[in-house]
Structures are given as structure tokens and as C-alpha cells.
Image 1 (cartoon, rainbow, N blue to C red):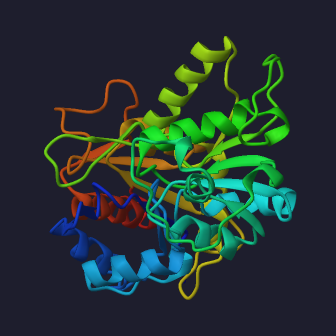
Image 2 (cartoon, rainbow, N blue to C red; image 1 turned 180 degrees about the horizontal axis):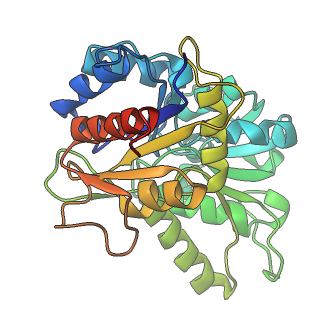
Length: 335
């Protein structure tokens, strides 16, 4: 009998921290791969606001770190639901921002976007666009940027050069008809759509304090835009805590095999995360059972006062054991 429940794990701060594996993560995932009292295989996905690589590459990285097989279809990165934008922008000119080198260009191409510019391309075209950082180009093709008007800006991953990328995204959204190097006079109507793959303001690494994330870049960009134009910057966001990402994840969970959830009912999903403002807020809003762990962003006593979780655990293994106990009690009629 297939279990009618599943797990969605954040990665950074739950399974790994920076380049280090959280010790309890391996045991937690083994429990779901059949090493439990009921010998059940419980489906799970890794649902993260990280990205900048393909799902296959991330699966390979995490598999090596945890010494357990993670399949690409189990990995949902912040930009994975942005595949849904391909139908609208497949042959349009899109500015893809973030990530290392050409990594996000490659991801976007893999999704089906055909016409891509990056901040590197624009700096290569005219280095004076940002004269403060020496340019480093991974793409040998020099683009004629003024002849390639931008139809949309998509931030796939965290910027590696905040100053340059803030400037270039502002150039794009302030340009007349998307032509980089021009500037509108009337800012009452925003011409260029802007998309973010996640809005997490902070995230956890092996540094003792949280680091600024893409959501903080978004805040800085919005403040600069409003200061310069006296208008609010409009955008669409994916990633946690947005419902689109959870709906996408739920679809993935229901299609996992072998050992997928029962087909005739909606699975109960236990979402394990370390960031109340992203992981817990999103899970609660979507109707999943939220479990907050203390191995990442959240380290306060008790529960989060702003976005309280259904349960708080020391680490991911305790979270999995708690959820399995809940399900066994449910199956035995004691819950």
C-alpha cells in the first residue's frame, strides 16, 4: 500500500549548511527510503529557494554530499516553476540575471527560452555600463545590445555583483521600449515585466550569521526605482512562500515513482524548513504541515512568533521521526 503522505525539505539550513552536511540529514532520508519500522518508502522532494544550476546538477551535488541517490525529478529549485513562463517568452528577448558565469543562461536555455541576454553580455557590449568592476566574460559572442530590446527581466538566482546587476536591471526597466542605453521620460506605466525566482531576504550558510538573499536584492532594487522614478516597481515572484511554487511541488510529488502517493486523494505533505518567513509561511498558507528546525536561520527558543510552525524540532531527523509517528498513529486510529 502506497503511503498517502510525503515530505518537502528545504536544503540550506535543513540538509546542508554551506559546504557541510548537517549530521542528521543522512539518517532522515534513509528513514524515508525504507529504513523505518514499517519498511515503507515515503516520497520526498527537495524544495529550495536556491538555484543557479540545473535540477540534474543539484541532484548530483546533494547525492554526493548525503551519500544517497537523489533523482533530478525530486529537486525543485527556485526557478523550476519559471518553466511556466516559456510559453509566453519562448522567442522573446529576456534578460536573465544571477548565478555564476553562464550557469543561469544554460538553465534558461534548457527550459526553452531561445533569446537570452545576461548582464555579462551587456557589460561586454559596453564596459562603461559598470566601470567599477573588471569584466569577466564566459560568453565569447559580442552582442549588438541596442538592436536587442528587452521584453522581460528574469532573476533566476542571486546576483554575484550586486552593484552592476542593480544598475543593469534598472537600465532595462527604465529603458524606452526595452532598448538598453535609452531612458523613458514617462514612468507612470511600467513597460518591462520583472520576475524573481525567490524573495528570501536571508539564508543560512556555514557563516555564523545569515547572509543576504535575492529578496534583499529585490528590496534594494525597488527602493532605488522608487527613488529615481517616484513610481512603485511591479514584479512577479516565484519560490517560497508563493503558492505557485507549492502547487508545482505538489504536482511533482504526485508523479514521483516508484512509491508515489495514492492517486485518488491529495497527499499530506510535511514541509521541513529553517526559515519561518519562507518555508513556514508558505507551507502554512498552502495547507501543508509545517515543521521548523533549529539548524539554520531560526535559532530562537520556542516557536516562531510571526510564522509559527505546526511543530518545532532540533533537526531534520527529529522532524521526520515526528511526522512518521503522526502517520503511524493515524493509520492505527490513535490520531
